[in-house]
Length: 202
Image (cartoon, rainbow, N blue to C red; front, side, top):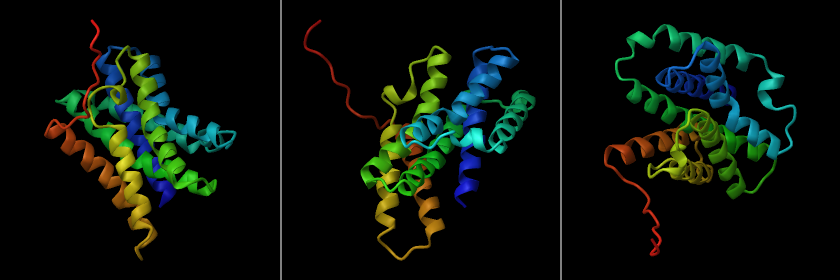
């Protein structure tokens, strides 16, 4: 179940990377690079922080094949995607939901405190997108007004809350991921955002 969620998250983030790269009119090499860093950027940072080296995607070639396959799929179907921005948002949202629970589980395997596990889950979900946006000359979504990291944190809290109940472990994974996805979808739909902090000085 854990491995399946990790692969699904990789696919979702790789496709979101391809879509934004196409939107930026990059060449084939640029598209593949953006897809790759989007898919594995957050996980790479997480593994480096917990000392899990070589990082996950280097030890399992399946991740590289999955990213390449997802990239080719998205490129071939680019003409079928009528709403590029909507598709990018959807795949990005699915990706953060899946990667949040993957990061939390990695933290638990390293016997870290729940708060640190939630931080790891948030980094896993967010930092691939941060690298993608920086390379594409965009302000990263996590630093804008959209609910992004907050959704990951809420999903992490849900994850640990559910562990206190006699619920099958696989369901805990799924429900926590869905909480992240639904939170972000609702936040965007109803324009819910964190307050901005302004300086009194001009």
